[in-house]
Length: 136
Figure 1 (cartoon, rainbow, N blue to C red):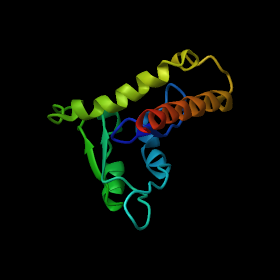
Figure 2: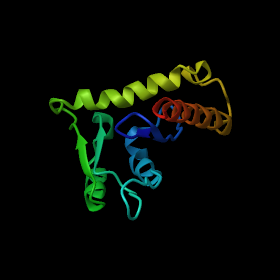
Figure 3: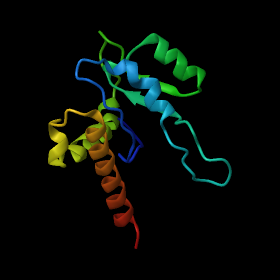
Figure 4: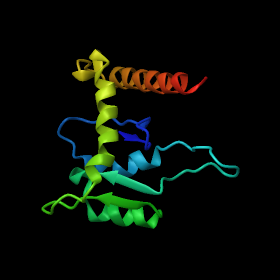
């Protein structure tokens, strides 16, 4: 899952339990939708990408730098980057929000399409609740 700095889920990819997170890094970055903000073209890439040690890989780091995205990922076998836990908390909080939907806490569906549909619905509800809360 990739989310913005406020914890709004932007892209979720479902894989088997035995698939390494590194294999999905670039697919998640490619799945970020254009974000409109200031006048001009909408942003298509983040300034930085925060990840835990599961996303540590030299080819991914090189590709992110080539795309002008700063990889903030702790290296395996070394101490964590100071203060990254406070920033990664947003992602863990988003996972906790997804697990509030009881159907997603444990994957019971045999077909990936059904599980992806429930995840998309949950992400939509999270986004709707955030929009509803920020509007006057």
